[in-house]
Length: 68
Image (tube, rainbow, N blue to C red; front, top):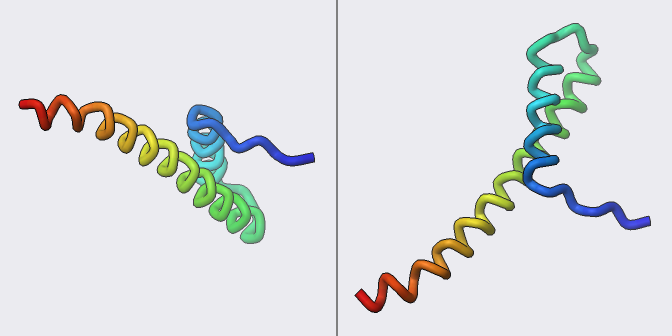
């Protein structure tokens, strides 16, 4: 079964959970590294969504900017 890509809100919420777990401590080094790596993945997913949104906004605004 193919995994559905995470939406922005789901990735953001999971990333916040990862940060809470890391800040709370009490995890093994291996678990901390796993959480860190997952956090990096989630941050990249969020950034991709934000980049796509910025590109759409720029595309919409560009014609009105050119008309002056």
